[in-house]
Length: 234
Length: 302
Image (cartoon, rainbow over all chains, first blue to last red; front, side):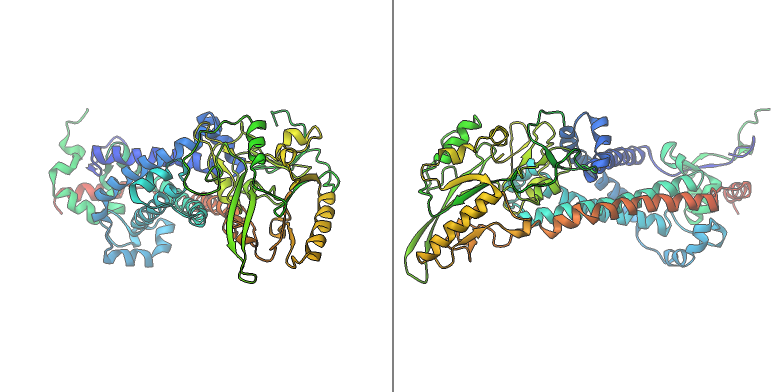
């Protein structure tokens, strides 16, 4: 979006991908506040304020977890092909100093996702899986149901481990989430990818040039042509 | 604490500040229940008295050929006589071991340590560990914290239940319902000092009558307990329906509820702080006009 001059905009995420992402995002934030409420007593008040009572926090957290796990799984199926490792990932990681300094001109041309985004994707995949399994182990009121389903009831020590592992994985997933949100804010022009579904051509050129080249070959992926092709406002 | 508490609270679950106006621990104030397994005749009067005082009604269960009735502690049954038929390998005798199971009221309570709900578990100056139901959220962390497998979560109100050591009775100078009902005085109640002295006399008596391994069960791994046993085989407590030999708060729970919390919150805060300073020093990563033009040109077919 230049000054008075429109540039091309390229499609990045379909409507269904965005809906899927925001279901994951909203349930993640709700899990974050309810989970942190149970993690440290000084944060207990957050969950009580938002949900009315500690009982409600305890009740709602696992159900939101189920929503997140299911929607994250769909997101995983949708995004994992583009997140498979590529050779340029190693070059990208080797030039991490340039990444951190925001000097994209020193980085190799990358496809839809760079190594950092792939790191976020795969670490969240693993952490969500861990949180789901340990979370079931901590869901006392449903353990009997899961026993009927699987014939398995965790021992007390396994449930203790589940608590420690659940809390540790939650801390890691929050750290990765901070990286994810920060990167989306720091790299300007990224947010519209998940709101409008498109990014500016310049964003693609700067950060995902290989992906941009591919997108531009397909006219249906171009949401808005350059200004010369539009009727001038003057 | 909103609820009326007739007793001074010295420890409160999930609370960063110390309980206010707590008097220093005083051995004379600390109450203790002493259970003498050799005097117990297994009549279950203690169970009936417990149900009566706590106004609990139980549905009859099926008889499956064991002496226990009920089959386990439940949210409505705070104490349970557990029976073991034990073959003494030294004498060849069959011994009938009866142990009254229930909350041990640890000096260092694992349930209180694990509890995430402020004020749901308290410890009074007299040593009683009590669940405050209006603050309980029913998460089951106390179950994980307990080294004795005592708390049970009610499916009716989703809160945790266990023996209160009749805190409501002891607050007004009464002994617990179970000890009051015990016909053989296998259960006695008094200050910790008195009960330790009482146990010493009883153990000396047992030893003089050939019970060489008679001893007191007051496990130091949890800082001692306010429910103690006199055992005639104190060297192997596990034969009494799995009484733990060296109970302590699990190191897993310790790591989770101890340093774990600070490391976790610290790591999260550090990530946010690093992000903040990165932004301060680097500034936004902006797409330049040149980038946009390059993209336009790329579409133009170059």
